[in-house]
Amino acid sequence: MINRNLIRIRIVQIVYSWYQNTNKDLRNAEKELMFGLQKSYDLYFYLLLLMVELTKAYENRVEAKRNKHLPSEEDLNPNTHLIHNKFILQLRENGQFNKQLSERPMIWDEDESFVKNLLDAILASDAYKAYTDIVAPTYDEDREFWRKAFKQFIYLNEELDNILEDECIYWNDDVEIVQTFVLKTIKKFAEEKGATQPLLPMFKDDEDRVFALKLLHDSIQNEKKYRNLIEKHTDKWDFDRIAFMDLIIMQVALAEIFTFDSIPISVSLNEYIEIAKSYSTPKSSTFINGILDAIVHEIKEENRIFKN
Image (cartoon, rainbow, N blue to C red; front, side, top):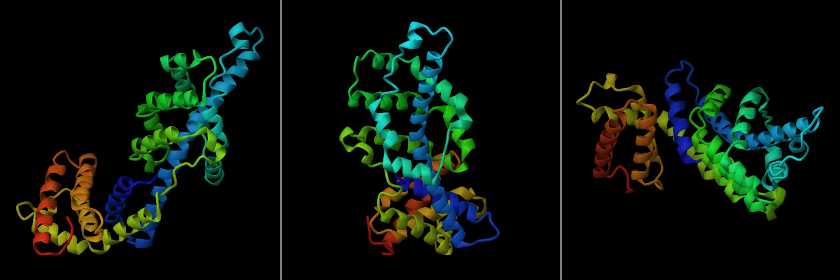
């Protein structure tokens, strides 16, 4: 689940903070990197758990209405599609989901009012009305309801984003990416897989873990090599006045270009230019693109790298 986009962003942040700290310890930087990536993976489960918590909130609401002193006919005979939703029941029983929650406990209790308001919005929606109009929903219809509800009410929800940012500083940059992974997970659920339905692993394979650590090491250990290249190609600017984040982004980008033969140069350039758009000044992406292009042209001419 931790893709290379997240890894690159996290490493740019770690390398940036490396130069802010007086105690420079590469092992501590490694630990911080892995801790941050673990928190990204936690967010994936936290968002899956939100759908379970919304279901629990509806169950509690139904039960409270049934136990009123003078319950109405609707109170006594509510629509129970959400309670019996086969996708949510499968998620609740999922072995990987429950193992993760037992090892790294997480709850939504402190944001009960948000969960309640979110449930109200879902219950008032056209999507929910269409769902309740189905007499006996199939598994696919149950799953599709939650995919639509997640996309409409949870994905890019500003109030939720603020809650998550307050909950964990590592989640500030992860929310949108992780939410797309949750949507993909919902879509991949299959009834026949039951409690063994695979969820996304933290890393797709060990190569991504190696990529993360190797990129961090090379970015820091070969600082002089990359800074010299950057300074040479920024002779029209005062090197000391270049935005520090721009310098870090270019340093990490060059580390990737020099270190990983299997990654095309164009891929690396595009990824770091996108990072610059989000994490540096409005003009940074154009500036970084120009400098990196010039450096790449030079090192290819000098046969210092052998890839396209």
